[in-house]
Image (cartoon, rainbow, N blue to C red; front, side):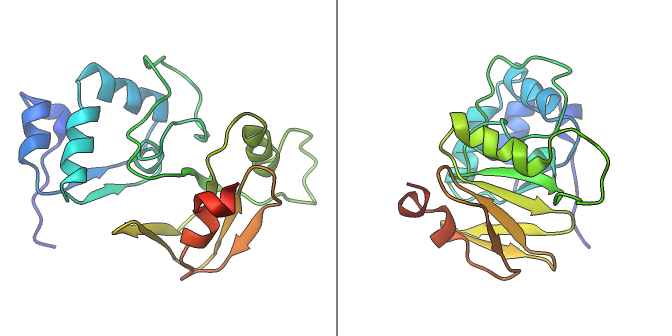
Length: 180
């Protein structure tokens, strides 16, 4: 594809690497471990600053969750403890990656993702995009568009979940007026 990739975890000076990067791709893994590494290396503010000045940010799975205000909608186990659950805050809503719809035929007696996200809204106000496998969000100039083929489920405190189709502009679903 003609791109060169330098892994930040191998950089002599990770802060300088963020400062000179043309774009940032943050992949998946354990969200707690990823956020802790960002805190340990003092990278949250440099990333916020660079993205705020126009550097493209691409996040996959845990990399998408850390773009949220907090990592409270991750599916991961807290194998390490970051200083805070506060994340990059590059976007104004939360994402639940790998969202799974309830399976009515399942004999599993545990909570579904939907139940967990409804519980999230018993304590939090941020809207949540339940992002199904293979779909993605493109956020440009403050506008979020759902890409892919499966659609997403939007959760807002005090409202029933809403299904949105691929290609939808999510701003109306995620705005403060819609979320109140």
